[in-house]
Image (cartoon, rainbow, N blue to C red; front, side, top):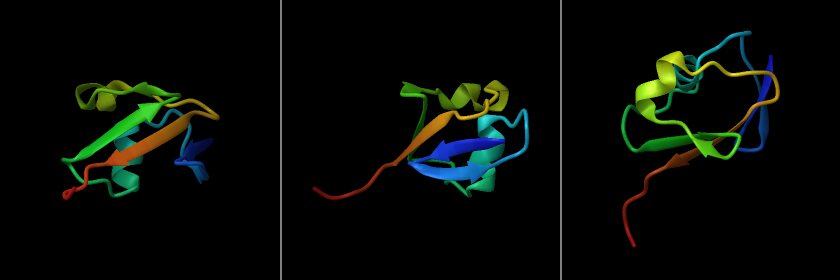
Amino acid sequence: MKISVNGKEHECVADATLAAVASELQLPKKGVAVAVNNKMAPRAEWDTFFLHENDRLTIIKAACGG
C-alpha cells in the first residue's frame, strides 16, 4: 500500500504497523516523534497502530544546538 512519509511516497505492506514502518525506515529508538495524518502517535502505541492506504506520516527528529 502507498503512504506518504514527509511528503514522499513510500510503499509498504498492507496492514503494516507504525513500528514496522519505523523499523523499515531505520528510525532511531530515541529522539524521534511521528505524526500520522497530523495527529501525534505515542511511541507506546506504535506496535498496535495500523497504517492505512494514503496515510500521511510526518517524522520529526530531535536536533541539538540552538
